[in-house]
Image (tube, rainbow, N blue to C red):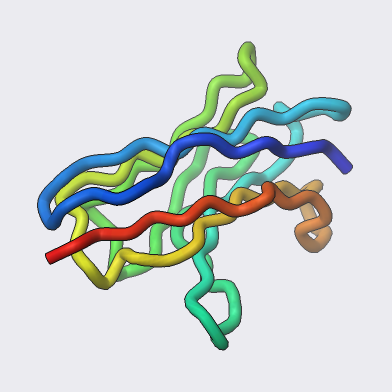
Length: 117
């Protein structure tokens, strides 16, 4: 496991941009597959974006073209750049990490993103 500490989030308006950060400590960041997920009240966490150890990225259909996942291995930090935000993006966002072939075993504390119309 690694320890993940999130920052960013907050209240924005439709069309605004926001960046989430997730700093890892206590483990080997660069070999892990990383992801951002979001969770609405009463719902399961849903994948938003993933980035593999080799840098390959993938996105949920709802955010493709608007969100960008990236990482800086030198800083042990994962990012989610969110642009053209809409109220439907309102959620609690979590970063997560896992070793290849395993389930997510490290989670950030979650951060609220609220997009007002």
